[in-house]
Image (tube, rainbow, N blue to C red):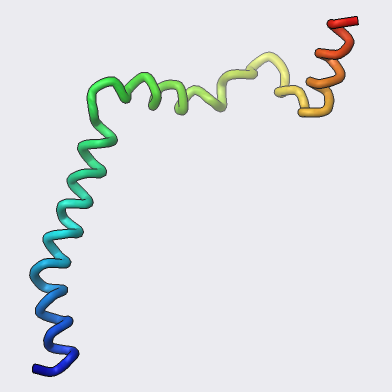
Length: 69
């Protein structure tokens, strides 16, 4: 059997089955019970700082240091 024919037969059968199982696994993982809270938290990221922009990392450290003093 030629190398190409062997690989083609494998891709048509077992590799297709493996990719289908991987796809279904990802779908089940995304819609698993309890994941809606995580998805809602991720979806609300752009709206967390509606009043003013988020502080820079350097500004946040300086602000925290000023509060301690």
